[in-house]
Image (cartoon, rainbow, N blue to C red; front, side, top):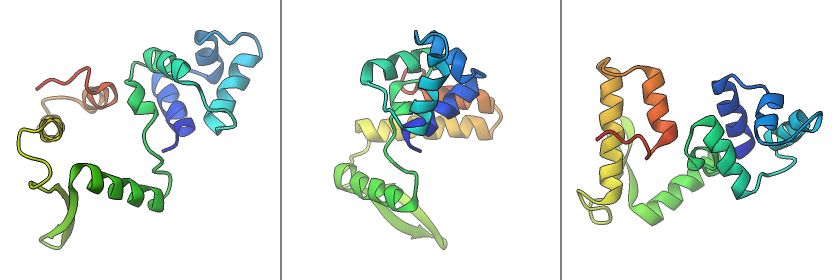
Length: 150
């Protein structure tokens, strides 16, 4: 999802209108909703300082707004390829299902990435077992690593 779609997703998640979020960011009058519409349509791209302010108001980590371009399958595939190059993500098959995993020759057990993924797995298991709600799981994901509850 591109940044404009992410802004809209998190704005709607908090129940804010474009005008409300724009005003909270300091845009006044008609410019508040116009400016937010420009960001959501990506006619304008917010600067890093504004992204930080938005993230704070939306109670998320800035990285939740600035994810790589995965708006289409080709962009997603190139994201996977970059993860393969950088972190040893590899693809395989298990019982006929496509599986992504980390190459242990590249990403050692108890490495930072391994710990991060295990933390995610722990939260996903808590959700599956009913120990946390979907809302708590989403809060954890969107504020990660702030709420990392290992």
